[in-house]
Amino acid sequence: MAYPNFPYRIDTQGRTATTTRLDVIRDRIEQVLFTEPGERVMMPTFGCGLNRLLFAGVSEAVIENTRSLVATSLQTWMQDDIDLSEVDVYFDNGALFINVAYIVLPTGESQQAMFEREVSA
Picture (cartoon, one colour):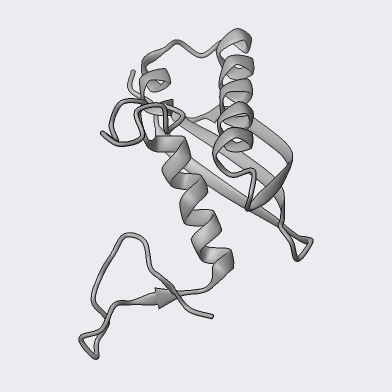
């Protein structure tokens, strides 16, 4: 089965570009992580709001808070698509890295996705 690609675009034949279910799930995870709560009018609580954490200083407390925020948001918004296995958060060379391990429902496929954002100084 084909799913509309995110972000939406037109392919070379003039049709809606499509992708696989695994790619759609990864894209949805990214949307949850980097959407600010309140950004979507009809879903005001949707999102994790990681962008606001990019300006916080790097500390163990910020890392643990970020890990907890990511896990809670994904369990809330992706509960029908994934079973979250692990969330790892770390900062390196001015960037925030989030590694998410999950099992795709209902197939049981193990997947892992890495997300990166530059951190402001």
